[in-house]
Length: 347
Ligand code: SAM
Image (tube, rainbow, N blue to C red; front, side):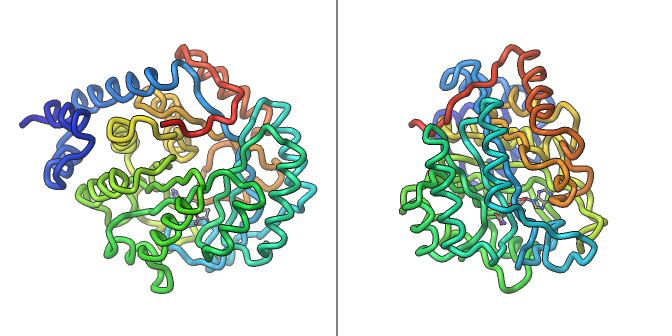
């Protein structure tokens, strides 16, 4: 069977055998990728019209107790100046974001134990009481179930926790031994059980990744059925053990976005910052390959360069308003519009 026929079969069955998916990822040429992108963008438009959902990301701490080999804010990076925003600074970001039209705030940080359950609950409750029509997405890493329950009870709506790779041996090559895929997946299952709209996802082109690993990621997602999926290229950071590893490919990332949309039609699928960093028009190409969400940074400008997961990260020099305006113009140029809405998952 040729790749176009495989893409059609994936569309019908919403899954494929591992060997077929691997071959598709390994051998897709430009024509196959364009076919997948057009199909995925059609599926996305039939669900969401020409609307692109927006979320304002607030990166509020770059302290992290973990030492993931790929990540610029890993504990072992002694070159990095660490920062934490205060609750008042986080609320200021929300005010600015609200006026720019954002109705979802994504609070993201390293795994920072300074933010105890009580501190996070207080922040979540305060944002919820000040912005009743907004959703809160958290991206704070691996926690106990009881902690996730407290966040949910306080009013958090969604949680992003990329699984990073669905293959345990590959996971062990990207992370130190104290981190395991089993615990990452335990967290994802807890989050979904508790009632969060839950997001998983992976990097494309992370060191040692094979086409079969990417096929395993797709099959993991077909089984887990996340509400959101974050997929972006791996990009190197100079102060990590993977500093000399090559970046992930933009075209392969776009293919993975398309296959994800085809497999999971209602999923909320961002065109990620890493995609926009790898290539200037990356996020626009992401939308044309099936993405329907964009997540501009609304963190204060003076700390942007300190939340550097990888080098040359997009948006380090433009403030929240400027980032939002640039994106609006780009999105409108291809006939889409940014929607002022919480943009919840709907099946
Ligand atoms: N600590 C939280 C967690 O573990 O989910 C949230 C922050 S973490 C830095 C957010 C995501 O950044 C990770 O899930 C990872 O996929 C991505 N990331 C980290 N380093 C990266 C790199 N060098 N290139 C591309 N993406 C990267």
